[in-house]
Amino acid sequence: MDTTAAPVGKSQFVRGVQKNIYRSVFLWLLFLPLAIVVIIPLLYETSMAFTLEANQLNFPIEWIPHPISISNFSHIFADTTLPIIRWFGNSLLVAIVGTVIVVFLSTLSGYAFARLEFPGRSALFSILLFSLMIPAAVTLIPSFLLLRDFKLLDTYAAIWLPAAATVTGIFLMRQHFYSIPNELEDAARVDGAGRFRIYWQVCLPLVRGAMVALSIFTFLGLWNDLFWPLIVLSNRETLTLPVGLLVIQQGSYIQRGLAFSGAFIASAPALLFYAIFQNKIIAGITTTGMAGQ
Amino acid sequence: MTTTTLPRPASKDSSPSKWKDIRKQLPNYLFILPHFFFFTVFLIYPIFRGMQISLFDWKIMLKEQHFIGLANFEALLKDKVFWQIMRQTGVFMVYTVVVNVILSLLVATGLKHPFFGSNFLRVLFYAPAILSVSVLGIVGIRVWDTQLGIINYFFTTLLGGPRIAWLGTPSNVIPVLAVTTVWWTFGFPMLVFIAGLQNIPDHLYEAAKIDGANPVQTFRFITIPLIMPTMLFVVVTQFIAHMQVFAQPYIISGGGPGNASRTAVMLLYETAWKFFRFGYASAIAVVLAAVMIVVTVILFGVMRRRTQY
Image 1: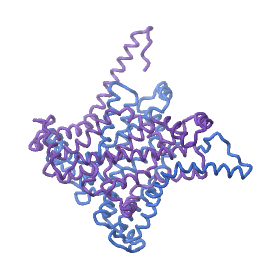
Image 2 (image 1 turned 90 degrees about the vertical axis):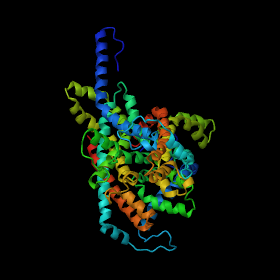
Image 3 (image 1 turned 180 degrees about the horizontal axis):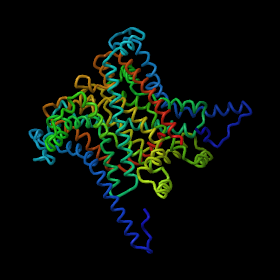
Image 4 (image 1 turned 30 degrees about the horizontal axis):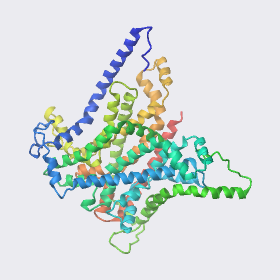
């Protein structure tokens, strides 16, 4: 907003600021109800996680628990049938390794489709594009049977291998590899660099932003996914956190506080991560969202 | 689609040198090979395999599967519960997509230009999408609870309304799940719309202002037509996501009361992994996919036409 450099009329500057204030107030009045609706369930989850089991049913709702108690957490940690720390670690492992696989394969393919020539390139790319139209529902049963035949059920390979088939990352990376000027590659080629080295040392560092965005989304997707882990994991020790939460939820008709503290353990780190990287995440969505077009 | 990105022009005249070019290009396949391997095994192959399994009375314990032709599909087409579930999945999808698109576009319009705290609001509105669906489920059950939920706490206790069984009444449960899903997901289309709106050149809005257009007219005649490409992307991705809804009804309402909130993918899941009828479940998947592909193509057709102005 250009309200600076106005020695001519100071009143104009003041008017500009005033208009800005009115606009802010007006928009805040508009958005406040929505903001409250968004915040309340999160606040409720947090309060209840720190509310004594005996006070869970208190009416009116205690938005600030009285007393603030960590007994739900100590219960959950003490219960050996609910190895939530183990689940947390499992989820981290699943998400980190899965992200590395997806990002590496997506940059390789995205690079090839953007900058390398080979027979059938556009045909192969069209196949990738068309596969976006196929709903994941049809692949569930055959993938499950395949993993069963390979004796991979109840291992994390059952999550990583199908994840490696995703195509959206390729579109994102391809888009970004396009924007690299040819001169950089040519210079590297003159210096005698092979095609893999050009990809790895010249081009990859230039698309770091897109790689970070793709990593964050892939990580969050794997970290939060419930459906596929629910299908391929059954041993209680190997569960990921979302599946573990379901176990807690299904057993918690009596202990409400337990489910809330479990939900808190799962959501607090994710929200913290989000709060720290919000700039990158939001910028990432806007670029990925655009890449989809 | 651009096909040439390398500066080296492909020589077309002499076939030996063309052959040499192709041979030189062969190592390039190594770049796409790793992904294509997984893509073929876990995406292409399962599509055809799934169609094949749907023709069998596939039971996981059996050594030899029993081929039954189209019997699964015949049974499915006659299955009243299946069509009820498909209809209610469609209703859920329409509610969710329509509310999500309208809400997120309006919010994006408000947040497009920065104002005091606008960045905070953006971050806040996307925050629910960071949660796992399991967390959403745990919170959702308790938010909508008839006796102790916070909705009825405000609605009944504070405002004196009737005590409504949100999840216990067949006519309420799908809208309730849709609202819950909108709360969880509207941040994503909002961000995509903000990006789309920022791509609309400012001079168009200035011209409209000079011509004396009011904000509603500006929205109707400038924003809506120019946001159509983004809208197409949002509507199609939202459609694909919400037509395959599983976890919200699975956790929050258990598909009930009765079958009132059972969805297509939930039925598929239960048929396959609770009752182990993989053939029948595959038929469900094939019908769902067919319906979805047809709708996607129609969406593309309708919205593409409206994009050309």
